[in-house]
Length: 230
Image (tube, rainbow, N blue to C red; front, side, top):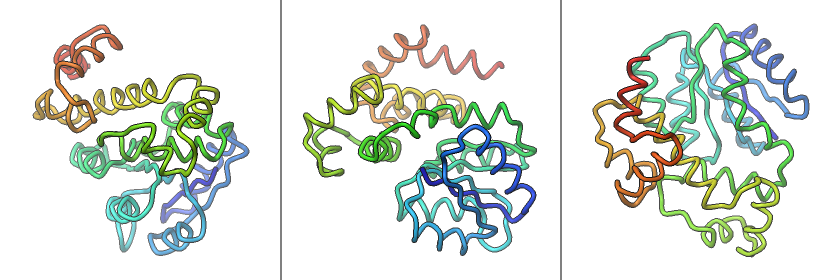
């Protein structure tokens, strides 16, 4: 799996590389100190996950994120020295999967990387399927659509998905949508529950609330209230 780290501070790059490599020795890590080098790497290699520092000379991490999201299918994590709510909101609006603050704490980094832990063991077809789910979860995604995008038979994809991921496509998609909804409920306190349901790909607020309660034991509204006091 190819990972890209972008930061204008060489020491920060080294530290991030060291922490990731320690946990995931099989990941191939590319490093860039500015946006133009990052773009050269992305054109040459199929990058699955990119860590982008916000504050860089020239193009900022958020500007680079926007450019990457427009042309490539990859997960992006923003790295920032600023605990700035505005940055968090912009990141999530762009479709960034997460953001971590500097100085980087190993536990925090590993918790963000937890969901990628199994990717190293997935076949290329499943990695590509997951990539599309992570990028397009807000759309009406179907197994047939996914299979056609990665040029394999739907029944084969269904079986392979279950074998490797340990759950069916629909179950995984719902879980991913719920995780995104949990983030949005906190990051966007002004957005209505129905808007969040729609943005996360659920076709009705009722269905969203139903499966949210089943997964978390509380309604989306109660979850938002409880978490905002933490």
